[in-house]
Image (cartoon, rainbow, N blue to C red; front, top):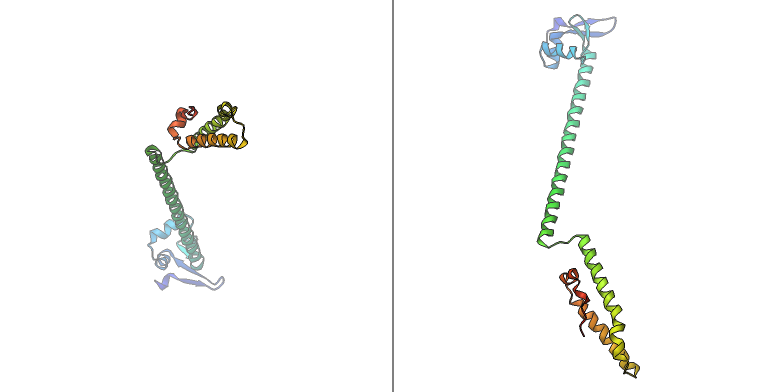
Amino acid sequence: MDINNIKKYSSSERIVIGTKALGEVFGVDRKWIEDLTKRGILEKQGRGTYDLIKNVNLYIKHLKAKTIASDDAKSIEIEKAQEDMKLKKAKREKAELELKITKGDLVTTREVKQTYGDLVQTFRSKMLMLPVKVAPKVIGLKEMKSIQDLIQQEVYNSLAELSKLTTDDLEKGGGDNETS
């Protein structure tokens, strides 16, 4: 650093330094100092002179802001990358689910509700038909135990028939045919 470019003013106790010397302090060339001055980052004291302490503080403030902006940009990039990974994961999971549905390894909630609805409807029909089916058979019976056994056997038959139903039977409405 050129000591001749530094002047101390006793009235304000400020150190005034030239453009070249300030560049040496910051480790940049004269043009860089002039550019920083034009951009309003540094402030000239006079023609080609700078208040050293003030401009060191201004330059430090500028570097901090630049670092914060860089950190913010990195944070935004990290967040964007995380969101991209979440989106890719969601798309992959969706594709896997669609493949399972296509293979028949997975059914939709709508299909499950439909199947159970069909099963309940078939069960209801069987139970409603039970009195019609059993009534003619109990007419000739006189003992309570015989009547109960007959009704119980018909209930078991209906339940056994229902237990053998497949989803294909339910879709076709195949659970409604009566067997004796």
